[in-house]
Image (cartoon, rainbow, N blue to C red; front, top):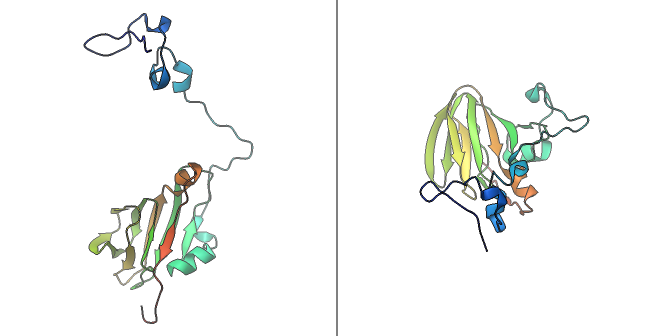
Length: 177
C-alpha cells in the first residue's frame, strides 16, 4: 500500500514523505526519498576515445557503402544510444531504396537534393534537417551539379542495447536504376 503523503493541490511530496512507505515506481521518482538514483554519475573508462578526427579522411565502411551505393563514413565513438555517419553523394547520384527499424535524422552539410520517404518527395539543401521514421521506404538523391554530404544520426545502438532485433532491408538494385 502506498502511504506517500502528498500536498493536496500541488501533488508535491510533503516534509513527512521521507518517513513514509512507498511502493513500486513511486519510490524511484520520489526525489526526497531516492535522491541517489536521480544523481548523474560520470562514466570514467580507461582509454575511452572522446574524438574521431577527420572522419571523412578515413576509409568508408565498405560493405555498408556498397549496399547503399555511395560512400558512408562511420563516426567511431563509444556512444551506446546513438550512431553518427557521414554520407557522400556525387552529383546526380542516389542511394538505394531502403528501410530500417530505427529512426534516422539527416543534417545536410553541403549540396542540394531530395529524399523520397514513403512516396513523399522532400527537397533539401545545406542547413536542412530531415527525419525518417522507422520502417519507412526511402531514398536520398543529389540533384545539384556538386556532391552532397550529410550527417546521419540513428537510435540503432539504443535499440540494440535494449535487446531489440533491428532490421534493415534494401530494395534490390536493377540495371539502370
